[in-house]
Image (cartoon, rainbow, N blue to C red; front, side, top):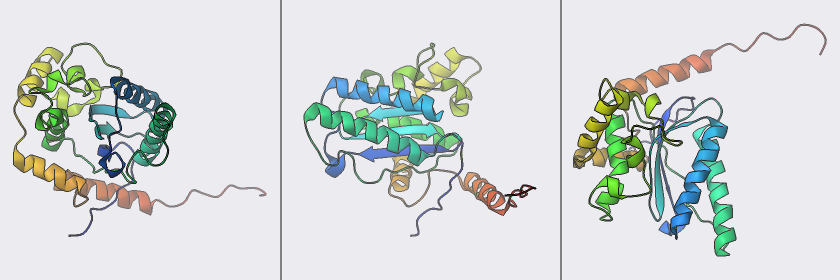
Amino acid sequence: MGRPIRIHLPNLNHHILNRGNNRQDVFLEDHDYLHYLGILKRYKHKFNFKIFAYCLMKNHIHLLIKTSSMGTVSDIMKAITIAHTRRYHHKYKSSGHVWQGRFKSPIVSTDDYFLALMRYIEQNPVRAGLVDHPGKYHYSSYRANVIMEEDELIDKEDNPTFLSLGRTMAERIENYKRIVSVPLEESKAALIRKSLGGQSHFSSDSYLEGLQKDVLRTEKKPPGRPRSGNN
């Protein structure tokens, strides 16, 4: 099966998976998780990207983000990975690769796929047997997604899928709690794993068709008019 098309456009949603090199642990103490969240905050402002869901596990991370024109997904992950690696080596007196060579970043469409992925990410600690409910895990976005207050990391107000869950924030939160408390169907989890394996994006066909048309329009744009006068 061929690899999915690569689309380089701003304002796309990406599911990012990054693992420790050789699946080694990248978070050894509680403060390591907190420091990584601080790095996310720093580069979230620098590159003006949105975060809708995340989960930090001992040896890997999941992020659901939306890029902007201020940085590609590669720019974002390069900055975050370098910052974390420097601190890791300084703290643990180590050297070499901390993260694997290449992260995964399939595109996610803003429809049923989006909500399924949020559930997949926040239910990760439950599937791993660490807790029996997403709300009991400290290093995921679940708690931020189910509080009324704004959060520095999670952009509920910019999440069209979350906003579609109700007319008021209280209604959306209650519906979200109910949905995320139910384990994700294996058929959907399998599609997510397939997308992380590089075989597809986690998106509807109609969404990808629209993106391909946007790419073609961008590529067909005529070059800008040359400046007049002497060079």
